[in-house]
Length: 170
Image (cartoon, rainbow, N blue to C red; front, side, top):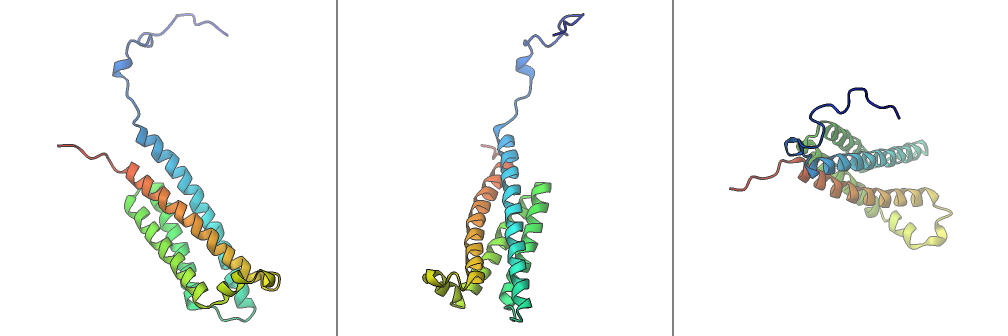
């Protein structure tokens, strides 16, 4: 290692520690929360794309898709766009809108799938899973989406709590 010619620069002997800034722990929590939420949003994008592919395949089989399926897909993509913009700009209002819209889109998907009765029929008869692969994939996609949605809501709520400034005590 090479020695310095002039020795230690002034002010770096450690005696100025009381004047240095301390980073609040909530900033590191915000950075970790943003990273986690970004990964969850990307996972939701993949799930939405697989759902869109499934919707396109049902259209190609000359099955008329439900208006609920189309609307839940549109709401899902719109909410992910809002979530990504809110995440990049650190806007708590957009993140709240993302949580609300993505939850509504998922609820519409569940309502659409489970009111038709085919999803419950497929889940209750494992012997028919081979014959009804398409429906099994859709149900597993919905359940995976539910798990990711729960994680995203918890992460977003924690992130919003850490992003807002601490309340001043009177």
